[in-house]
Amino acid sequence: MTTGAGDHSIVTRGLTKRFRGGQLAVDDLHLSVPRGSVFGFLGPNGSGKTTTIRMLLGLVAPTQGGWDLLGTPMPGGVAAVLPRVGALVEGPAFYPYLSGEANLRRYDAADPKADPRTASRRIGLALDRVGLAAAAGKRYRAYSLGMRQRLAIAAALLGPRELLVLDEPTNGLDPQGTREVRALVREIAADGTTVFVSSHLLAEVEQMCTHVGVMRTGRLVAQGPIAGLLGGEAVTVRVETPDTAEAAAVLAGLGLEGVRTGDGQAVAELGGHAPERVTAALVAAGVAVRGLAVQRPSLEDVFVGLTGEGFDVDG
Ligand SMILES: Nc1ncnc2c1ncn2[C@@H]1O[C@H](COP(=O)(O)OP(=O)(O)OP(=O)(O)O)[C@@H](O)[C@H]1O
Image 1 (cartoon, rainbow, N blue to C red):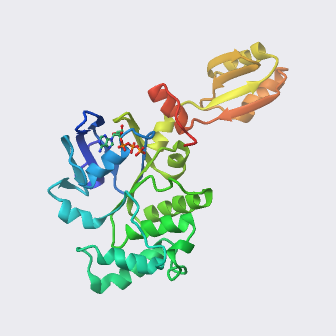
Image 2: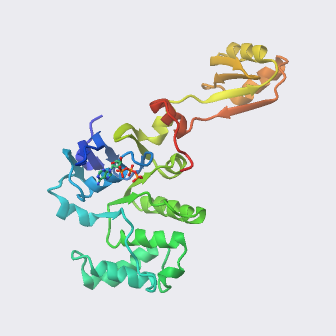
């Protein structure tokens, strides 16, 4: 199926960045971020995520390649498009002794494109959107880590946005703050804003995103809907038993594929078989079943399958 530019919030064509020292930070990137998606831009530290985001926002010039934001070729369209894009790349510096609201006022006043006549309304909406309306008058220094990051996201939402770009928004947060930010990202997406969010945490992307692009040393090794990437991996059934040969025979007899044994286990691809039928067949054949587990593929399995390497899942 071919898709028009209007279906995608971000499209890049061979986007490449070589720094002056010769470092190839981003290498021939072809990204397609569908409108309405929560797109997880996943990769270990140093894989080129921030450099890509900086190029997308026109903060650093690519060495090669082109890109569209919201259907408009860049960098020519920067002035027209950027007001419709919210971004959190390096968190804005907030004043500790000012309230959240006063900080947003200062931030907004420093933006020459922002209309001061609508500032109060826009600030109110942004605070409300990130769940800080009740804490708007509190000093920033009294905010929790999660509240601080939500205020930074509010700063990116001081106008109606079609696309929100967040660079590692949960970095440095405590577990509570991380949960708050993840929930907020999902809410913003539910409002219809496309969210492009970078992360080095597989589990986070798996929980928060509909789509993923996987970076490895400057190259995009996979992209697409998470469900599609996971769908390529088999669901397996793992039987713990002293009778591995008998169990394997039962699994093969049921028509399961990829049957293998070892280490007190018989393993096979579950295919379309119901786990309860498999269990019943094993028991009926007199196999001593100590345990039976159905393992669904995770994004980590997909990642390891793609790159042959593990991933720093815990950050
Ligand atoms: N201004 C620069 N000059 C030279 N090299 C740079 C510059 N900025 C980034 N790099 C290098 O480019 C590579 C990609 O860095 P980048 O910050 O884009 O990765 P990242 O995936 O965002 O990682 P992190 O999460 O650690 O920021 C790294 O090897 C980095 O050292």
